[in-house]
Length: 232
Length: 301
Picture 1 (spheres, helix red, strand yellow):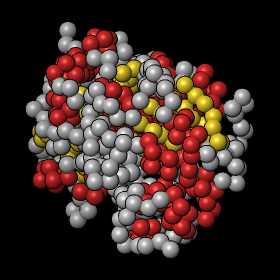
Picture 2 (cartoon, one colour):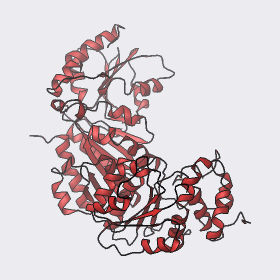
Picture 3 (cartoon, chains in turn yellow, purple):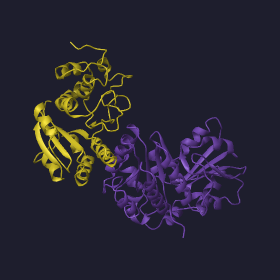
Picture 4 (cartoon, one colour):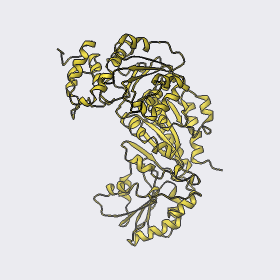
C-alpha cells in the first residue's frame, strides 16, 4: 500500500502502484510502461541530481522527449522525492501540475516541456553545447521512442551531435517496435552511422541498462537502444 | 557607404559575443560568412549547425536553458516558417528567451522567388504569446533594437531588410514615433515604408506615426495621437498584420481602419524588391492612391 502525502524515497517495487494512481490516459499505458525501467535506472543509479537542488547548474539533465504516457516518469519523480505521491492522483485534472504531457514550468525537476514528438533531442544538443561551453561536468540524457524517431527533426540532431562530438549527450531510444515503417538494420546502426557510440540492450534488464549507460564513449555521443516488448 | 542592416547585425553580434560570455549565436549556414571571425574566435558558443533550421531553434532553447542568451539567424522563411513549431514549443512553451534575427524582409531577394519570401513572418509570430517584434526601418535603428534585445531575456524577433529609410529616427523600443501631426487622418507607417509614406502624404494634412515595434503594439501612443476618422496602416509585410491590434486599441473610439501591405496571394514574379513594391502598391504612388481612396471611403484593395 502506497503511503501518500509525504515525500519518501520509494523503491522500484512501488512504481507500478504509483503509476496506477494516475488515471485517464490508459491509451498511452504501453507507452508509459515501455519507459519504466529505463527511467528508474536513470534516476536510481545514473543521474547526478537532487530534488532539493533542482536548479544546480551542474546537475545532470534528463529530457523526456517522448512526452506521451508520462505516468512512469511521474511515478519515478514521486518515488525519488521530486513531487508528492498524492499529486499523482490529480493526473490530468484541470488544475493539476501533472498533464498527460509534462510541463517544465509546472513540475519540479522536469527539464523540458514535451509532447509533440521530435523536440527533445534538438534541445538536448543545445544543452550539451551550453554545458560544454561552461566546462560543466553535467551530462544530458534524452529519452526518445522508436516511433518518435520517424520525425525528421531528430535526424538533424543525431547528425550534428555526432559531428560536434558531444560526449556528454546520451540518447536512450526506447524501442517497442511502434515505428510505422521500422528501422532496417536497427536503430543502433542509425546512430553509429552518424558517429555515435551505440548499443542495444534489453530495456527490462536494469543491470544491462546500467552497464550500457555507464560504458565509456569518449569523444562521441552515446546512444542506447532499450528494446522492450511491443505491448510495453 | 552606409552598412546595411544585415552588415550592422554581423558586426554587432560579433562585438557582443566578444564582450559578453552569455551571448551565443546559432546559425544554419546562412550568415556563416558574415560571422566567420566569431565562429573561429568562439567555437563553443557561436555554432553553425548546418542547414538544419529545426535544430537551430532547438539548440537555441538548450543554450538558453543552460544560461546563454542565444541569437539565431537566417532568412525569414527559414527562421520563422520552417521551424515554427520549435519557436512555439522549444522557446515559447518551454519558456526561454532568444533573439531571432531574420534577413530578407518580405521579398528583398525577389529574384529567388517565393521560396525565399516570407511576408507572413510578423503575422505568424504574432499568433504566439510573449514575442516582442521589431521592424526597424534603418540600419541604425536595427542596431539599436538589437542591442536592447541582447540585454534582455525575452523572446524577440528582429526583422531586417535591405529596404531602408534615408534617415534614422530617435525611436524608443515599444513605442510609436510621432513623425508628423495633422488633422484629417492617422497613418501608421511600419519600418522601411516610412519614407514612401511621407512622400505619398507630403501634401496631406495627416498625422504620421512610425512603427518599429510591431508587438506589443503601442496603442497608447495611437490613442493619444489620433487625427480624423480614419486610421491607415502601411506595413511592408502581409496586409492587415496589425489591423487587429489597431482595432483593439480603438475598441471604444469609432474609427475606420484601412490596411495597406503585401497581398495574401501567390505572386509568381522575380525581379527586384522595388518592382514588387510597385506591383503591390507599396511605392509612394501606390500608397498615395490608396490613402486617397481610404479618405474617400472607397475600399483600398
